[in-house]
Length: 526
Image (tube, rainbow, N blue to C red; front, side, top):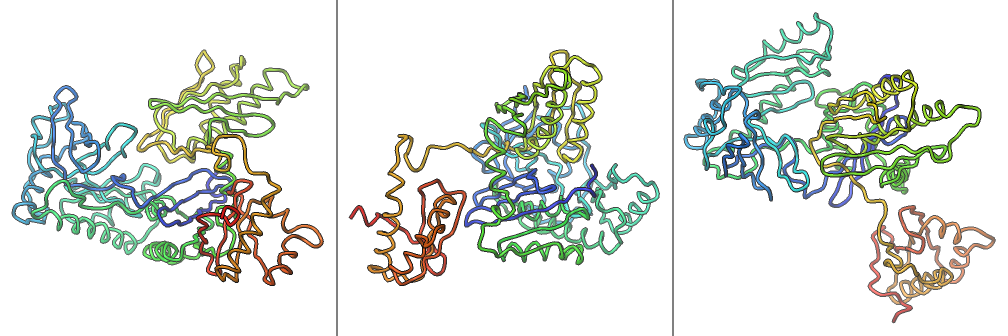
């Protein structure tokens, strides 16, 4: 299936301390991203750090960038121009020299040298986060600084032009190189991204100016700077996803926050006024993740056991070093087929879901999949090819190996951050792990007592109650319904709102502005 045949939608919801971004392909959730206000040391952020310790045995250094754990800088991540960059940073800090066009290049770093010959303890260096902190490890950093834009990537001190290998037309590659050669600043390298294909001089020039401005702003912060300090932010996740993901194949972007909606529209307008038409502001009463069935898919897609269809299910185990996926057929057996054909059909169903799970959970490192045993070499070969097809839309770098003699298929997938793990099981908030809750028959009485307290004692007049869908149905069905009986009792219409994220006996009261009314103790307890 090609990109053009897939309906792609981005669903963005905002909460006080978090933004959640869901990518849907043909209405199925394939990626979920979270950005919290406490996020730090994100991929792409640039820091002025201090070399804390040189480790000759690892041929690496630990760099203080202000994180809980020191960042890890390997010799291979220095880049060939590390000495020149270090000299420029020193001059910028001490003498406020900001232009790299005039700086004289120093000796390039050898491919097989020692890190102690390039860096010293206590030295201030400019580094960029390449991998977020994972588990007990600090972030991994590089001194090869780059700024990614919509069409171009700006690389200071490289002074070369590279074109994405995905642009196959030699004529188009030459055209893009010629354009960039004419607008490229001296001593800066440019990487031309795939989405730059067929773009005009104006498009590329505007993108380059934005990237150059970001570099200039970063350099301006270096004069007399005290490490560790953040010099430049990567774009927030929302803008970064828009930049890297949204292309002509996208159908719509739905956003429930007015401020984020404006930011996304302005960002898209900066490089394509036509693209702003796909951005839609969502202002319905039903939560956006429920409206687009994202909330339900999250609950069904995370956890140790993932049910697919027809009884087929996966068992997914996470460890720090690797992930293990076990395929189970459950009760899916067609009597009209041989055991071999049944196993192959189940494995195909599982392979498609596994490809989705890798993207959804952002599982990186080594992934071992234990498919149901097959003996036919043709089936094994076809399953391997199908796995490659299913993962064709995965933007993370990955390698898939054919099934080995034990029936295991191994995948290595780019790992740049912690795998997304959403806990779908938790201690019951109603019984707190005891297995006992208040009788459901008393729920109606508790709601009525609370209503009486709020309306008569606190003077609340326009009240909405949020309840579980089952309770919502119980309160609204029948002639007359309980909701109608409340109307005659309280001389006020009580609004009800169904929320599938609530547990069965949970409820919340909201005022006319839809602000939650905090109930420190229930009236029945007074």
